[in-house]
Image 1 (cartoon, rainbow, N blue to C red):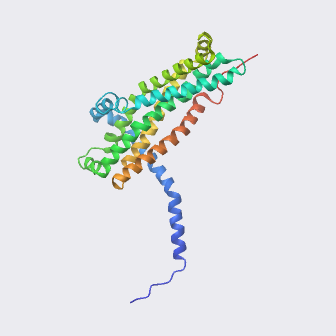
Image 2 (image 1 turned 30 degrees about the vertical axis):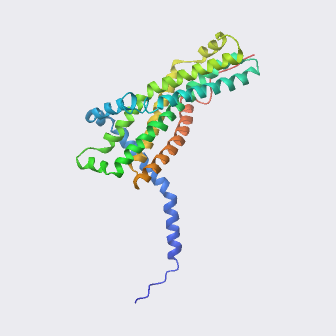
Image 3 (image 1 turned 180 degrees about the vertical axis):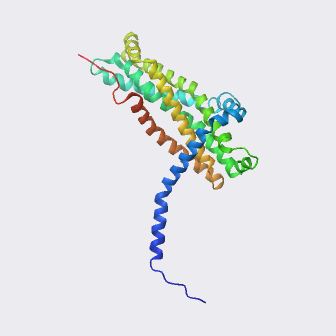
Length: 287
């Protein structure tokens, strides 16, 4: 029996080391996620050149194929419901506020600005993240715990271009019609709500609506939607790609991916709005 040395500073040092690791773990995770993001982004040419068959198969499944995410999976329905809801809210709140100033028909310019610049791209991206992104996390997480990703590496198939980049490109391609449907539903719902609330004709509403609506804004808005869905899909693919802990770990990864993607989408949406349009909406009311 030998006596162990007594080190009074060891417990304190160990506790400080654990606190340090706990504090730096989120920073390390963020750096790891950024490296994953860059690897998936730079793999686009390789993916289109070597794995275009897998990309086309995923695009078909995401949009119109069997077990589709956008149609059969319910994302299109979610996008339509979200578009109707936010369109109705814009119509109700915008008309009630402007009607106090005698400018009820001017709600058209609110619809052309708010629906186009903010709500339509954000709602469409969230609809895809809730359905399509969560499925990406579950698919990749199941492959990780079943060691299928390791098997791909053993047969010289690059897992990130083959599994991640193909899904990201397919998500962007499927996002375009989804965004267009969400934007159109938002426009239509706002107009119907304003006409029902005011009881008047649609001429004044459409005048203000067309006065403020610009094709450049729609293109910028589509770009926002594409960037948001790319970022959210990358985050959710990341959590699925590095899932651990068996089936329970896949569920935990799906929850973490959804939480992180929503948070990042809100922040990026604000930054993109300021970068594309600044802090000036460009609308003026003069007496």
